[in-house]
Length: 195
Image 1 (cartoon, one colour):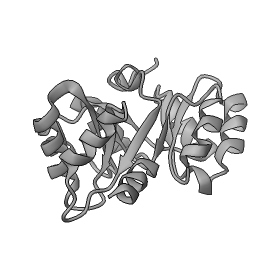
Image 2: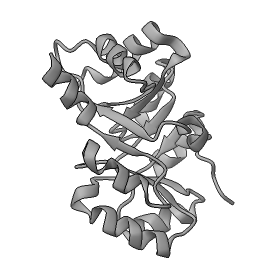
Image 3: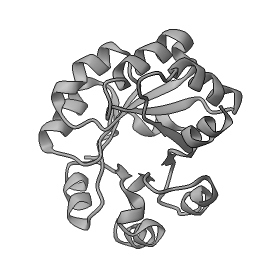
């Protein structure tokens, strides 16, 4: 039985390039989201690598409502999910996957994208019906060449690679039949350079 992961593909439909953003003290998440919207980008993945991730999700949701699609990245355990649900997070992204986390994400009702990079990890998630996965960090695990090979091994699985992808290389990834979106930090770097 294929698991639609709480409709992850529909949630990310039309969002081929997803900004992956880490906010720090003094950053203005609302101003950054406005910058993205001015550039025609209506989706963001906010990592939980700093204490400013969850407040940023709340601030952007409050400022823009359902005009934007907000994801939480670096989700590591089930204990993080209640606060993310309360903040009206649209989708969850984890760098890897445990059965406990998959079960919790499934039950949360939020769309989710678990990470896998090795054939064994992909096979395990596939055995649980998952067919839409994050591939991270892409540049350390074979990048486009690995994804090409996985396209032959697992033709029913699609990926959102992130990690080491630049604006200039994003099209190369998106040209692969098993890549439905790419995540990148280049949006934040470009924003910081303009300031």
